[in-house]
Image 1 (cartoon, rainbow, N blue to C red):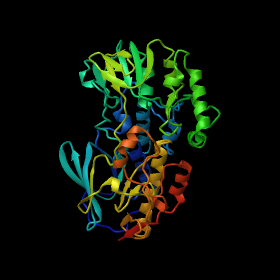
Image 2: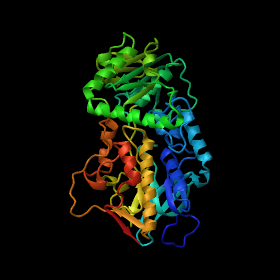
Image 3: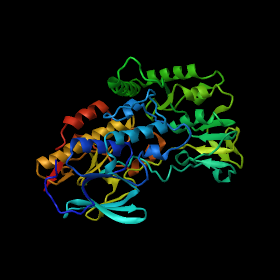
Image 4: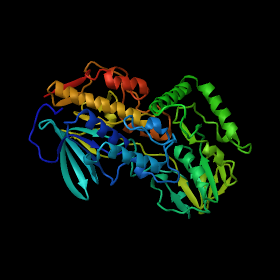
Length: 481
């Protein structure tokens, strides 16, 4: 299917440009190639490799925090027997997915998009790209952002009193130094999220001592890291989607029961020496913040070793060689790992303009979970907070495909979401979680309404998938030639 109005363009023009070669970009590339074989498209990636998150993170034990049967692509199932995928296997899986469907041709590396400007006169996007410090321009009828939801260059600042006085090594997991040898080191992990829970059992294999220091506890669920043998490959994905979604819903519907269930499971897995009420009793209900996963209970097993410990409380200060807590406890440290979270960010730091006017994300409402109010032919890929990211990314991709087909059918070139003048709905925050990093970012994120195509998406994978395939995508969408 070609776009309906032909224009004269140079070699750097595409019908569609996808920005980002991570999971979202790869999935979108496959959907475009398979569903719209006549549409020209390119995937632009600022880094020199595919993978996004999985190319960036290299800390010890890096792995998925969702099962890979649901996180993997629907069109190329996760081939390994472990549901929780290690970082290097995920990277290999992404490479093999691209090779299997011959998507390589579409990827352009070291093409960092600096800015993009929609011209109503030309009816296209003009993208300014830094390629090896040479600025170049691409144009496209439609642009899709697959840039993820956090800042790759600047992690969330670690506000720890006295950290600058520390004479040892300070590492943020987002920038773990390659080949760093921590054998025999006394290591302190500051944080209680998925990264900290991944690091502790892996660092303990070589470090002399590993202490996890948390301000408050998180929920941690053990997942058997082996596939269900009685399920065929074709049903594994459906099972894990159902399992994770049902678990999240139970937590939301029956929080007290699930809180007790987590407590019982936690007590079973920990040694008697660990104070469960102090270190494993979160202040919030399950899934009010993201649930952390522990494959085969490796996090809990680590506390049965003599070189691991957990401390809960407020850090008073860091000295040259220690971490001092407000309760007077002193922790010796050679290395401090600041696993204190990510800086959330939409748009990959790209300046986006419409006819010269800068787009401010936090002033825009979201249409059908993937377009922004008043921005023509523009999509951003968004996944789930309480389910595998890729499920949401695929729902976005199907809406994009239907949008492009709609333009062709209606002999239009431009589609722009518009809020009706009579519509007045209160804004709803983007993320449904209460995690500190997400709460801090709300002022920078786009908004949901409470009705029609402006209502929140990415809460229910089954409902979103049905809507993406067959739901209404014409309401409040202005088409023009």
